[in-house]
Length: 135
Picture 1 (cartoon, helix red, strand yellow):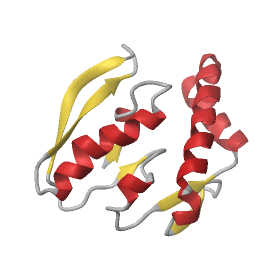
Picture 2 (cartoon, one colour):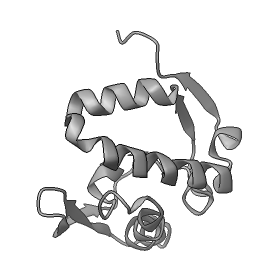
Picture 3 (spheres, one colour):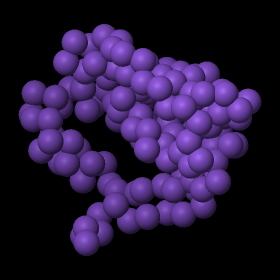
């Protein structure tokens, strides 16, 4: 599984993750080559080591922008997990702390632009209720 949190180049990097994911992982896999990406070190706010993905038989990519058209055109299944903004914020702040609220606000603005341009929810094969209790 590839977590896009490892790819985003910082809090302002949602849009930048799409070409990084495509060039480093999706395009090489489609060409039958090994894939890799440079992990983002959130503590240092800088690029970290290269993570080698190889050529897995199945690759699950999760995170905002994983459903971008240039990525999803190679996907077998696109899943949209839906939860209201207040729920997403509450979970993020609970995980990261109140000091991260300004970052979450910036991220939410990027999400709005991205999802409006990409129409991700409308293209999803499956829509999951992200507020349902976990099993």
